[in-house]
Image 1: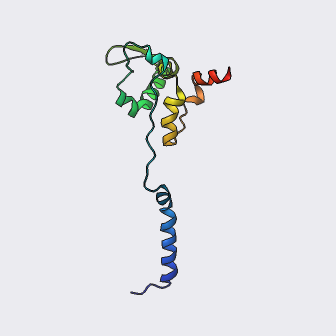
Image 2 (image 1 turned 180 degrees about the horizontal axis):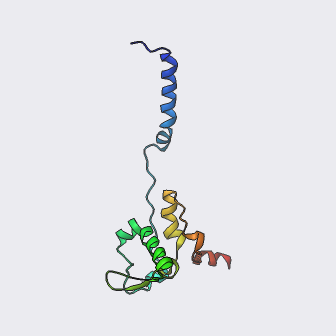
Image 3 (image 1 turned 90 degrees about the vertical axis):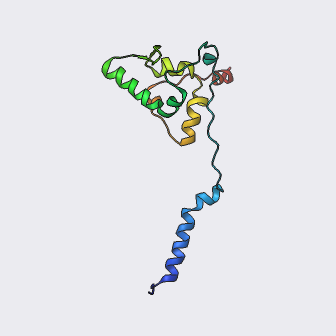
Amino acid sequence: MKIYDAKPILIGLVIFIGFVSLPFWLNGGKASPPPDPKLDTPAIQILEKKECVASKDYMRKAHMVVLNDWRTQAVRNAKRYYVTAGGTTYPASLQRACMRCHSNKAQFCDTCHNYIGLAPYCWDCHLPPKQETAQATKK
């Protein structure tokens, strides 16, 4: 079987594969290190019992599911409190529950979201908590 114009086709194919694989060659097979969100806010440090509304693993995987469910329940069903499996009641609120402990948005939320290149739309409506370091630098 003879391929007509085989030489320019093969050269074009090699150039195409080179461009497609260029990011892998430039990165050298190294993955960027995963983020390490900081949990050492003053609010968390003074808590006697350090617990969240769900387990750490669940919140890492499904925090947006929880937040979307809270939003839906609050807006459509006027259900503004969330009761955990352990019986603890929390306000179903990003600002009154989540950001009360995780007040370090830049070190907690932004590190993971920037790592995966995701811009959450939470802050389109909610005000982010004031960063303590930002206040300290303004003085």
